[in-house]
Amino acid sequence: MEAGFFPLDQELQVPEGHLLPHAQDTLVRLSSELPFRRAATHLEQTLGVVVHASTARRQTLAVGQRMLEVQNTQAQPLSACPEEPAAERLAMSSDGSMVPLVGGVWAEVKMVAVGEVQRCRRKGEEQTVTTKLTYCARMAPAATFADQASAELRRRGIERAKEVCAIQDGAEWIQGFVQGHRHDALRILDFAHAASSVYAIADKIREGGGHLPPKWVDGILHRLKHEGPTRVLLHLTRLVRRYPQIQEQVTYLQKRRDLMDYPTYRAAGWPIGSWRVSRAATNGSSKPVSKAQACIGNPSMSIPCSPCVWHS
Image 1 (tube, rainbow, N blue to C red):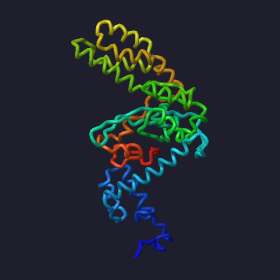
Image 2: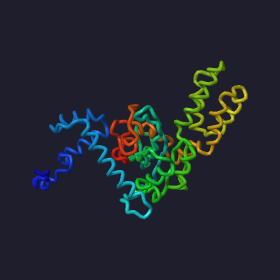
Image 3: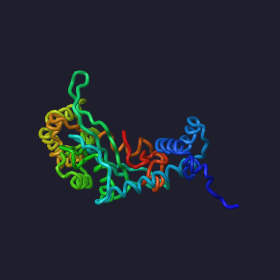
Image 4: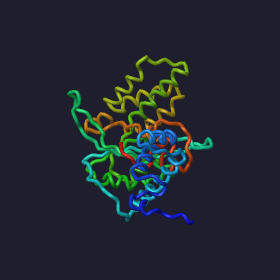
């Protein structure tokens, strides 16, 4: 007797793999956030449906692969792509994050986050907030990632928004990414990256036997945030003469002087931080994943993107 498809299965719209649509959707969503074994356990506890961890992996990868194909098709220049009304002000932030692959190999996952910038009052103070965050991530070369991310950027309206800022670490591939998608975007060095360089400078000076006031870092960052880079860079340039070991960090900041006008950015209502983009790329996990998993989704929790575009 040959295997066949029972007519009732068609009537009930049972997908390939024996799971009903609601169960499959729940399993895939769980597997995009949890390891497969835990996802299968949660599915049983929630819906009473019993599946093996290998089924969770197979279903999640299959759905991720199909969604990846759709997204890549939408990214083609002449392809139809759903678009939502563009916000007046959008912020995008790009970064790369190293993730461990199966076999002890590390690779870089590139990501872009897009959010709507708004001014609001909290606790009696006017603040800048970034809402409606969405992300797109790929393990791909910079040029390929720029092409594949275009569908999500078109959907959010990066080209149609009245104003856009790009928060970044100043890497060359990110500069090219911003230039290609919104050349007039206001470029801002992520304040966390500037701060990490200042902390590194303090550590190197103290490790070399130098003396700095206990609150030196706090003072430098306060001045950078509220007064801008001019006096800070002048001070650091003088320190280089006494402590040449800090030259690399000082040069990093000097090259990005034009991206550190934080008082002006804040006065104009722009955010100066990038919402932990690289942290989002790994979901805080160091668990190894295969190359295929890194490309199309998060079957093992290291890359929470099955689909590769997701909302926060």
